Image (cartoon, rainbow, N blue to C red; front, side, top):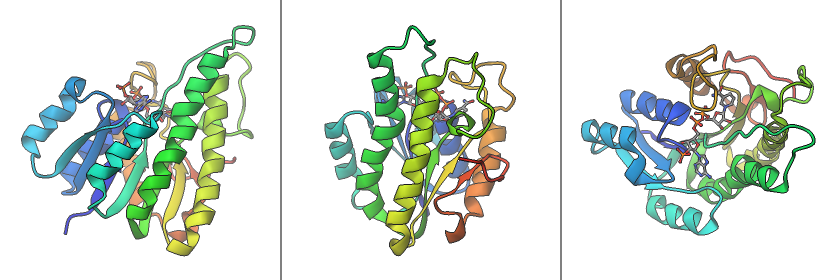
Length: 230
Ligand code: NDP
């Protein structure tokens, strides 16, 4: 039986990197995207891995999309879930808007919680749920006053709290929930100046994910495997 992984936001960036990695390791991969028609890179992978890649439509801010998605995968047992989909919008103090804050929290925090709620019953004991967080979500690391990632940082801090709470709730099921920062990565979100390529970041995170155990559940790690302060 193949291991099964679910990756959200799989059409580009780190999500696509996770999909490529786990396909190359012989896993069965469920990759989600908002628009299958525009997910050209995923479709291309499907040509090579027709039996091992399942592409599903999922908008994490839409409850009916979540329900529809779960109907398509409920026959599967999941070994790994990677809540990767996320957005970042810069907005400076004085120009903050309800719309931006709400949107960011809906995708980065609330969408992850609502999806995790319906996905964990498909997970087996010793399976892992990874929330892709960010160093910007750490309250105790240096906070740069110049950077205008306030809503994003708040949404990831809330995601970290969600990680700790879900880990506590799933402890009796032996399902491990971990928040992980990917580093600063060259994607549409990270930009061309970022320090890591997608494959470098994925290599580090996948190694870390491989080695996780029950003691790690409820914790926050960097891509290097160091504990991140909350
Ligand atoms: P990208 O912007 O390249 O990709 C984001 C992915 O999320 C896309 O697949 C996008 O789909 C998807 N997505 C966005 N909104 C939604 C939604 N409402 N429902 C479903 N999917 C959605 O970003 P990265 O690959 O860089 O980021 C991946 C994760 O890593 C994010 O959680 C991000 O916060 C985190 N991260 C990234 C860092 C970096 O340096 N790159 C640093 C720290 C954390 P679509 O194409 O349809 O928009």
